[in-house]
Image (tube, rainbow, N blue to C red; front, side):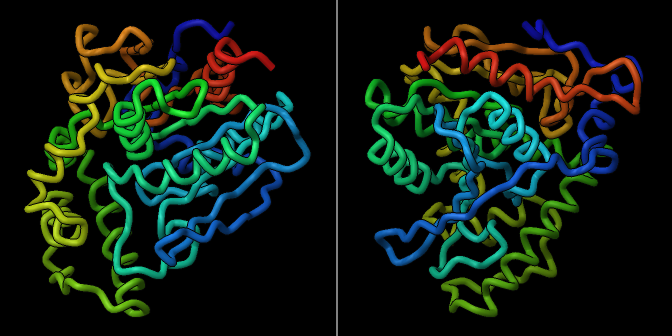
Length: 318
């Protein structure tokens, strides 16, 4: 057993936990095969699969502007493959390296696409255990979907990591201190993605992207009008997953750090808000999708890639 997370003595700072993989981790080596799924609305989703295994299936929902090339996703795919399980990363629309076809995107509350993919996998592989892992934005989507489905959710277990349980909290936290660096980078990537999309697909909105400086700005100018919300506040209040946790009926592990650099300590849910099927592991340290241990900087231990498979192994019969 991996035991509770303990940060590396040389990496206790939240920002260092968050940034260390970006700058110092080499890409985990795992072979992936792409499958394009055509959707009923004429758009598509890309799944990247590990190769060779025939065991249980672990589906990953990545974070904002992530992909199967995100180091946390590759690391988990490698760990899953080592156990003889099948791993797959579902790219949200427009995140697989090619803009999607329709004048829409993805967001923190868009559960229709993962619902389609999960049901497709369950139909294809009815006898295989199936789990879904969501990181950050993908975790919020996953928890909202689980609450919508209740007992009918066609999966065996789920894990959600570093979830922005209250999106307004996260948008506000990223306005302060060093966390503004994360906001600058992510908002820039979002605006660049929108420009590329706008060049290929006629869009129903034409926001002044040069004026966008924050998530509040982007979600007011782009996310909300593009997806039927009145404004950013309406979007955040509608899709934030914390309010839905009590409706979840499937086994779920929540992994979260109080020092998550994308949100406030009070953003994490209280035990009274959890359904009986949810297990919350709340660490004092870990940053945002960090959770790095290890005795020495040249030999870090990516704890999530141990803890997640350990939990899943207790939830299914293989």
